[in-house]
Image (tube, rainbow, N blue to C red; front, side, top):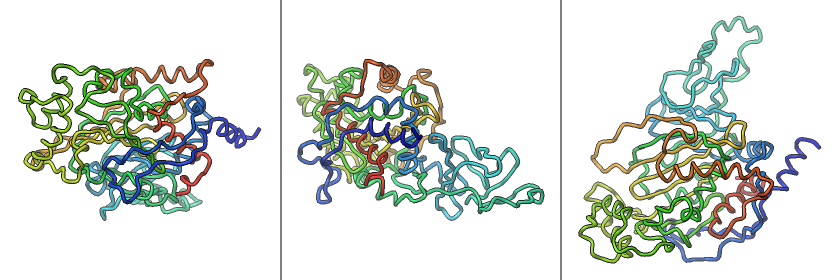
Length: 452
């Protein structure tokens, strides 16, 4: 069997069931206001094949038909404030260099010298007037064009028949820079729609980065995406969260590529018994808003509503602009997946952003990027940018909740290889996972989603 035929057979065997319809927010609806409950989209009920997580052949299929077609998150735009500032970011076998140009525009390039293939810059951020390869000092300008090739007269064939390193599509949105490995990628705004409109009222540009960590996790990148796209596991590995959020019967919305759910904060899970006093996690939410829990004498079920009212009333005096957000956004987690690999826990005062990147060669490993941000009040000083940390799975605590996920995921990945396991058996609370695989299938099959 040929390589292409083998890939087609693998895709056919592991494809998720065909879908009938996908729920979306219509233009007439507010993009951030919860809509009335409608029936879930029909995405099938068959198991999700485990080979999608374990097969090197499937990993290669993803690379050829998905990773090289979509828009991808490259970095934080504030790291590219001045001409010559750059971000070098890796995805699979590729490294991409994103550079602020002298005219203020942004450009992205393959991060590779055209002489012998050396990386021009290591992963991370920096600044310079040019990019000189440290191997033989071939030098490139900020726009990727050749500046100098030492001893050019010894190359009887002349320089490479191009102007410089190959460029890639690059745009900025939401305080972040994005790139695509697809030279024919359409506008970023079309790809992000409607999520870019949903998130526009948040003050991302006024948020300072507080953590920048990359962890090498022992699992497939999709296992990590799955872990953050359902609340069904809260009762299992995050029981402490049930004392300040509602984890059952959430509103789930699916769009052409992306999806979300809305998680009420400042309230209790219906899985726990109402306590006699305010739980400590909810007290933290109240104090962060400026409320004193000792002065509160209303029922616990009113706290979420009253925190919203308090923030609406006092936000401006605290130097925080909440005018573009609805009341629920003042307390709740509006949780988005930007396909394929960006998860956003979006709040009025902070943002937790996770980027899941595939390993270069091993489907059982991945890179998990944690970027957290805090809203800075008007007139308040900005903190220094945190130093980037790169650690191995389990070597460093990344916070209680994420530690719980990190501890669990290697077992998930190992179990995928068991002869006793056929694939993911998903319930209604895991609708976002099924939708995610539907969108992935669209790209693997070259469907309509992949054409735009």
